[in-house]
Image 1: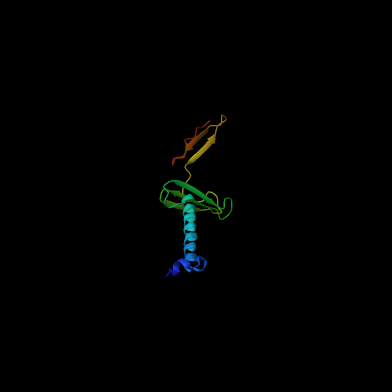
Image 2: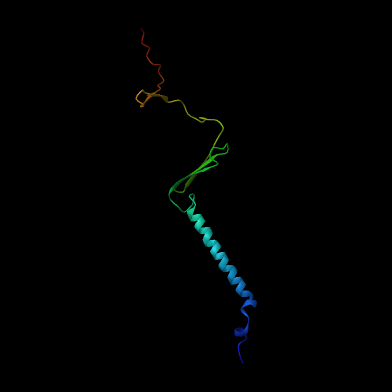
Length: 113
């Protein structure tokens, strides 16, 4: 009396195709994990990263990751818009250096000639 399992053809065994599918999915999962690890916005990385989406386009967006903090900035069609006040004036000198003159609430003293 011999065992029937030893005489069966391996090509007809349905469990072998399932084992092959599991192997394929394991390779796929490993490849996806490598892609996630290489992504600059990886949630597990603690380094800083800046990603610019659609540079120069009207719908440009910047994503800045600093550790676990992620901020998104979207481009607007107005230049220099936002909250704030003029703080002073910068002048370029003949030698190429810059001089910053802060503005004050007081009017500058007028010298009469």
